[in-house]
Every structure is written in structure tokens, then in C-alpha cells.
Length: 87
Image (cartoon, rainbow, N blue to C red; front, side):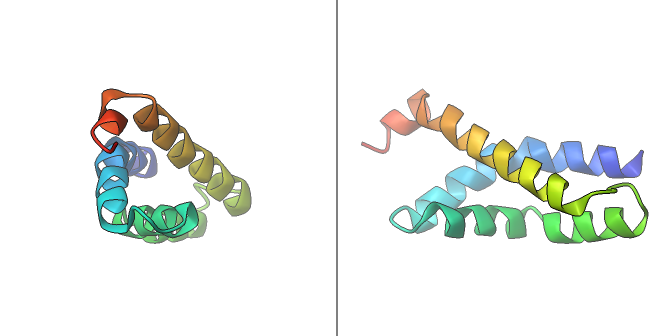
């Protein structure tokens, strides 16, 4: 249960981290910004520990899902008032 609790805490901070990465690296590619977000959120360590504890049984699928979550949050932010301030 500790893994799920930690994951939910990290997911709660993703919009803030995405916004920060956008402010710092706005003109850079999306993959770079996504990697910055993942690193800032401490996700590599969380995933590594969860794999070792067998809380994540398919690391590749987990990381693909995480990528989709981040891309989804970016889509939501781009469709919101947040994006209007970037124009």
C-alpha cells in the first residue's frame, strides 16, 4: 500500500512539475520536458523500488502508462486557461 500512496502523491504534483518544465524548457522537445518531469518527481526511484518489491510486475507497461498520464495532463493544461497565458 505504501507504493500506491507514494504514487498518488507524485501524481498530484505532476501538473506543477509539468508547468515548471514548460517554463524552463518551453522551446525544447516534449520528450526532454517529460524526462525532466519524471526525474523531478522522483519516479525512477519509486519505480525501481516498486519493481524490486514486486509491486510493479511489468515495468515497461507501467512506464508506458506513466507516459500517457503525463501526456494527458499536458493535453488538459493546453486546453485550459493555463495555456492561454502562454500565447
